[in-house]
Length: 307
Image 1 (cartoon, rainbow, N blue to C red):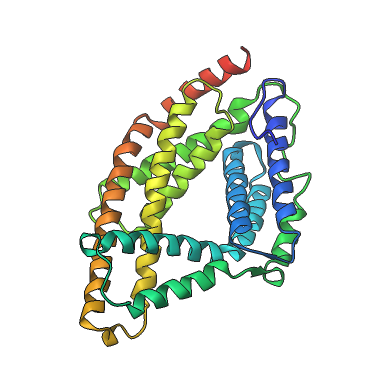
Image 2: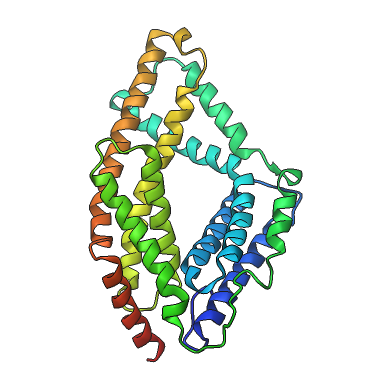
């Protein structure tokens, strides 16, 4: 499955081809009786690619049609969030707990709260998503086949400006503005960090379509680093929220309470370090204004496309 644009096809036809291939991939995954963590992850990631393509082509799509398609995809992805959230929270727990141990030493006795958290998260992470909980949403996604990108005209040879420049510039500017907002906000809220991560991922998905264009691969590498750091920090946020809901913490023994507090402190420290690492790299990604960024990329796209 070739998910990159080719010189041999015009831009809109190439974008449509890739979007339809991604839609078929999702349809094949959801044609089962139930979904476990791995296919859920694949389906949700593919849907993120599709939604990013809708944002990229916002300048060439009827606004209402784009919003409807985005909502259909968003609704379906939301039905699959449970096992995925539990899986990443479990992975974050195992890593953070191991790193929080005093000098790497295992506790002398088995800690009840650790076993309870691990058991609960494993149960949620490995529980299949029953088909009846997402079937109607999946049918909505499948109905998009053949018209996921409803361009009014996709026969023009090179339509970069009208097709993707508006969307690409908006995605870039949104990420750049969020970066500035976070830098100017002491103790920026988790929601703001999460929004920055989404815009970083969107920009990466959009640029991945033109990976062969000069300068795009190094930029994608930086976006991957930022996205990974923000993703790990987000997983730790989910873990902390989960741990805050652990019942009967007052009934823990002194040793258990100490280990619990040590884990929370480690989570906060690690999350702060990940945020700072992401900010440092993101400054290099968003160093240009939106117009300069897209103008530069437009020239390089045309050079590659006609080369």
